[in-house]
Image 1: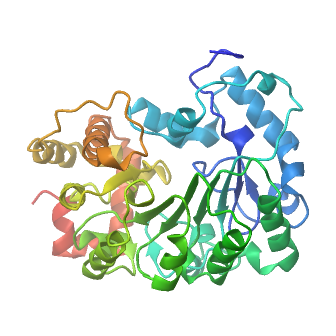
Image 2 (image 1 turned 135 degrees about the vertical axis):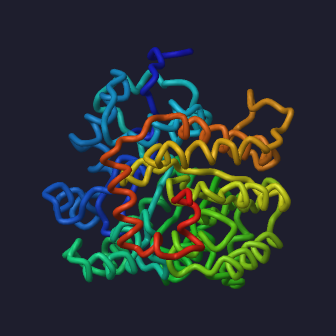
Length: 405
């Protein structure tokens, strides 16, 4: 290896990627929990009053890079640390697969180039209110939290409505010679007007050859006009957020209808083209979803669809480990039937859709490791209090997963 010695906490994201939240605040990494809007940080570190280049040179980003080089474990990166310890694919590992060598110039504190990757939320407008979500990522959640006096901010947050900020960010992309990766999320991108406008801007300016153009959608909208435009890009990865392949998904992702959602995914699969137009299932394994998550895994195997998950770490009472020991034991017995592939994941990249079967096996193994972890009694009590407030324990269809009769 050239340059610096790699440590177990090193990650290239603070050098390579810029992340923009729905309210326009900058963020070091999309795998970190969103910064809270209306903090002193958000009032100064945003697309309205700070350029992307200024953000990259900010004290916040300098410190983030120094921590990575020094091997310092920081709380913001808990998701990746958790997934690394579960021996599953984390964003850190995926980025290291792209950039396995630390360039020598990273030793220079003032070294900066324009980012290789943009990870951008184009607003929190959303038609779902998922149980593990927050107002920054869903206007529906914002409405619910306001009704519950848990949130006092704006219901709709969307930095793209500011013409100056929009032009500043898109122009940065258009004039950036290093621009190779783009990931768009919301909210729900397919109901945000600026999503199609961004696609048009990229195509008009000859940026259809990006190495990677990904987006995360809840699968509720199939817009064939936009999909036809996306087909013009060199590589598209549509990640569809879904937790289970049965009615439990309707409870977790409030507003979803599982039958319609699966039908929409099958329609999206008709656009699939190996190595060019990829459909990926994106799930967030949690104490809410794992009871029937094997049905989703089996559905994906039947349809030859890859899976990429983000292990839930916040709120911590919804973590898999917080389920009672007797429920976890029942799940371990249930998953014992699973027939694993004979192939090894060694040398296989996480984003290679041809190895969907091996990726799914790895996801289940990570879930089983979480089922072995001890629970925190107070967190378990908090989990069941939450289930009670939602009315889940009064619903026999859902109660069966959480209570041993």
